[in-house]
Length: 354
Picture (cartoon, rainbow, N blue to C red):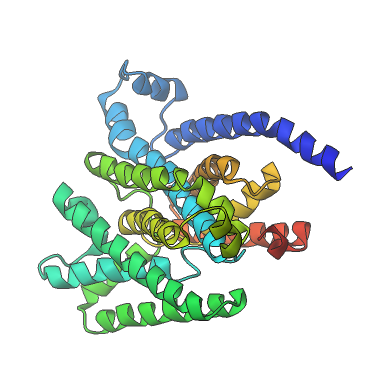
């Protein structure tokens, strides 16, 4: 019976991938159609096809505001979800993720340090005002910050084998990192604190069209590294001893997983601010849908599922029919938490997947 169920799910995978791709494409168009200015859908399609629009203002809104926002949602959802999948496999912990283990906080610390050292740059939220070189500096600082926290947790994991204990230690490291940022806030001017608080709410609308390629390049590099790690990831899921028996270098695999996760989580946090729960919830949703722990299926599935979920969250955050925009991190938490609870109840034993 179990074998028949597995064969059924395996046969349904092409359909699931087709539905996910169709869902992302449909939600991308819907996302472009939403906003304070009503633009007919056929006009948006014409702009996408390069035929232009009957109104120049519509074309400028679609190209300069809505396309960067929707593409950022796809990139951020994919990158954070893949980062969560890598963390859950590396630590063999169902609750591991960039935000839970303090990796996102480490990226925030890296960004804060750059802004503090910059002196004249007083606003993290003003990243859209920076040049391409400034954006790269922010991305590198955020990636180094997240890599530093991840390395610290990894070193501790050599001594601590218990997953729950390691998770608690990760939370503590995250709190320490947040405390350092709080000290910086305490000695900052009121206008700096206000800008920083706005940045912590998370936003998908802060990446201008001219700098979107930087976010795309960082995400693609991180994703390509992860795709090259499929075999080590499958081996690590069965335990380090089994991975070594397969002839895999566990140390080398860990280093590359850290580099990939740091680029994915650090790059997104630098541009969009901290966005929680996507990294935890999406890998579980993908495993439930495809019924497998094989990373050749999970990685592309997680990328698509992450893009789809964050597009949904962004549509909700824009509150269709109003001029209000909710903080994206609040919306992802409101949706992500019930999803995780539902998956835990449905699967009853998440640890069995690891």
